[in-house]
Amino acid sequence: MSDALVEFLRRRGGAVHTRAVRAAGFTPHTMVSAVREGRIERIRRSWLIHVECTPHRRAAAARGGRLTCVSAAAERGLWVPAPADPHIWVPSTASRLDATDVRLHRAVGPVPLARIEPDEHIVNVLYHVASCLPPADALAVWESALRQRLVDGEVLRRVIWRSPRAAEMARVAGALSDSGLESHFRALLSAAGISMRQQVRIDGHHVDGLIGERLVVQLDGFAFHSAPADRRRDLEQDARLVLRGYTVLRFDYAQVMLEPATVVDRVRTAMAQGLHLGPSPR
Image (tube, rainbow, N blue to C red):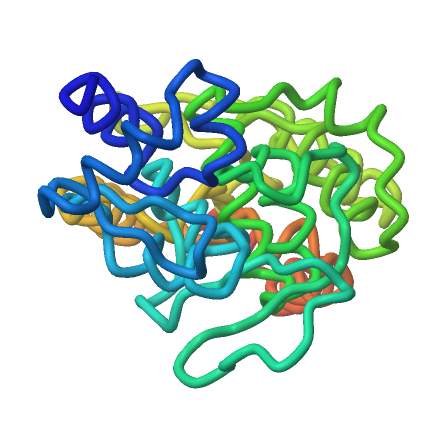
């Protein structure tokens, strides 16, 4: 049975509470034998650790919690800011925990989980991200989850978040795809009295928007983790347009959604300089 227990821990991420192990049918004798054989490790009396358990998961188990926020997001392959100390959810009643080199979260996410559950639900991950990170970075993580189809936008909008920041993220990120971002941007300009044509073909390529005759708008649906090749392609297209006499304004997802007044002001300023007008007749 030791082999089966070791494999069970490995499949569950490397850190499992003994209650969950017993519920899976393993006896206390099997646990003790595997520990004595050095095949698994016991920490905090009630957590069993596989030899391949990651340091972050080990840190969570050592505090009787589970990875959450950016640490859980990174485990799922989502975009996250620069690597940092592990973010660990612990019960609100937990005390005398070592907070050295870790970030402890005590708020309870919308999805109810047993305190011994080793894996955070993706909705709870996003809940903690919304409260923990600056808005632009939080939006990047949420957008990454949507792009990888780990969560559905309509589901996010229906969640009872109990957090104004998470509710706003659900409204913003859950409502838009890339094409939706263009529609939102056009509505933003329309409310400001600015007309824009969408998906205009120039120099053999489509641009996201054209204001007047010469003011091009390009929208980056998710600029936080674009590949270098994508970035070079965008710069090359912008250069071709400039050489043909166009002015290019490029806005990313976070700017449009979180700084709409600034975006509109930049467009208006460009128009005040006549950058949307065609060449003067000779």
